[in-house]
Image (tube, rainbow, N blue to C red; front, side, top):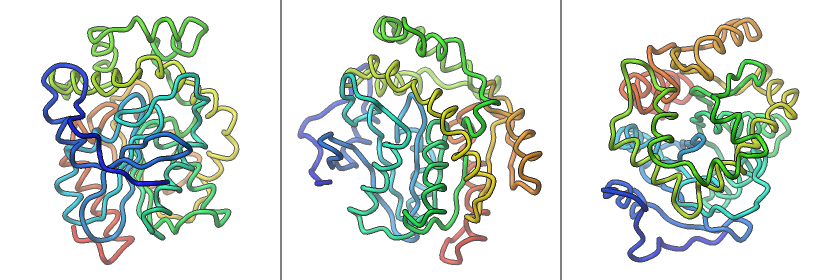
Length: 307
């Protein structure tokens, strides 16, 4: 991977996106297997790697960012097909490759141990990283915190749009989808009392639309089948890992909310789980509560972390 500076004058697509422009200016570009990859790195202290979800990007962490960088050396890339990173047409996107992207970036940055914070699509990346950790093929993971995501494929309840995107007409639907349909669909996975603002929805859509990203939605959705194919490896890693683990779950999430936590507690007795009265995006809907739960947990795992 070779690091370069952001393109001069680069701007995010869509209306009134000055915050996204600032987010990009605060980051850096590197390369991974010939593709430009955007990442943010800021702060000092123990390393914390933030792994975002589908269909969004590292921007998901912006509400936590000011507090995180006061305590951690925070690294947050946009994975292939997401956000400011390249979205190569026809690419065979996979969770396994996204895990390798993170490992390559950490190797480039010289990071040999880190805490992990993962959400949605990113929890599957985290599970692959846990499996590789057990095999001795990663940096040392000091802890892993998992937000809402499909940790158990049999408990995952995909939204209708996800099912359509995974169907043969998915590529057509993704190209024709506009900001209104996208916003309505995304808002339905938020909690009833923690709905996203109009500006937040505009930002999410702009990140999806950038660089041919609407097309990539249907290509990236293959992760649902990959979860099923990798179930034994990824669920096994989740249930047997010795890495300290905490789950922070928005229980009103219709996709991977309270029903998922209940089943995981049956499979892993004593699971450290924090339930919040929000939906699928706890870090956006309840950033103060997520930060408190994260810091309380990580400080127990690492004496260098200040709550």
